[in-house]
Image (cartoon, rainbow, N blue to C red; front, top):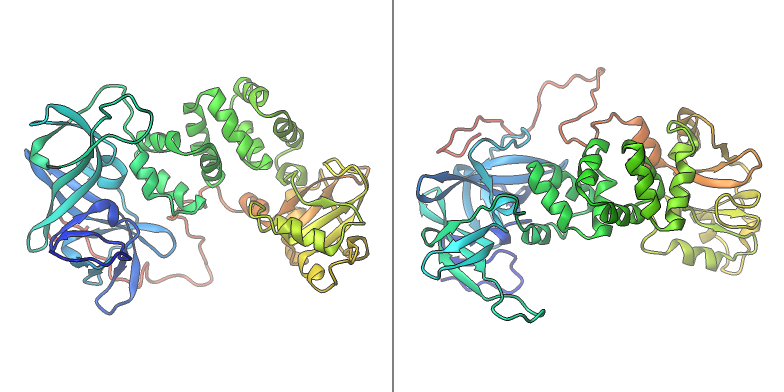
Length: 450
């Protein structure tokens, strides 16, 4: 038995038994000690009545690409790290028939306990080295239903051998995704979106259903439009409207524009009035114009606002970095469409002046706003020409209606599949002669290659 320090992220029950949920996020190193990536899941295959065999790990390497690491290439698992032979196939992982991802698909499954004549839910899976380089599922950590009607606490837990359970499958019953969502808690929205897109469709929808409204909103903003629509179509109208309320108005408008007109109107009617008003306002502009790209939630203040007050506004945690790079100064009212637009004050300039300085004296006189009907290409040219991260957008009366940020323009300029890790922009002037600096091998079940 090993005594593992409290700070260690990998929990070992014995020298050769590891609980899979504890592997998520563990670093993978080559023999030289260089970090290759981090574990995201474990892949198993079923073998008749025997316990499932581990065939490999899904490892996230630099670039957010998820690749397969055959178990035969793993030389050591312990102390919060995995050591490999140093040979990894850098081709994107694709799940094959018969393969099951433990964290993504097995955790949350319901099973029947043979000797206890009851049901339980799998919360963790132990894999054990049965022979040199061969790992199998040995034990399950399961939670049984509560035996009392109390709304507090959870049911009892139990360790059971694989042979002592029967997997339960009920038609129409959704698999719990609680444990999977917990393993994703440290991921940024863009990384969580990528992880969800790697899941089977039904499992992705189960995870989406388990996420909070705010977390799901953040994830949807990072997904391709087709996947956004697929998830929204699986949500009831009340939940969908709540999620849209949590999204940035421009992202919510883009998503609603992809839905049927009937459902879009229904969701707008269920949204909070202020949020729905912003979205309707954005939908009134053509998608490939400044008005179609902009967000209606920049920081807007009066000319009498001080530097200290301005810095306090951009210090808010929920504010996107691009929106915090500059403050818009207008005449009242201070909600789009505002009074006459006076100018912008950049964050760096505020740092050069005393706290009591009025922002009306620090306006950037060289920056001209763009009209709401200006083409997106013109907005991109302005941002690039003047090294800006945002540009104000005004209507024909020079009232501020929003700002276009650099991320909005990048979304417009990049190809539709840019979120896919397989999409790499080509460079004709410098043709590549190699797809990877890490040796690429083929996989064959048994020796751990793919």
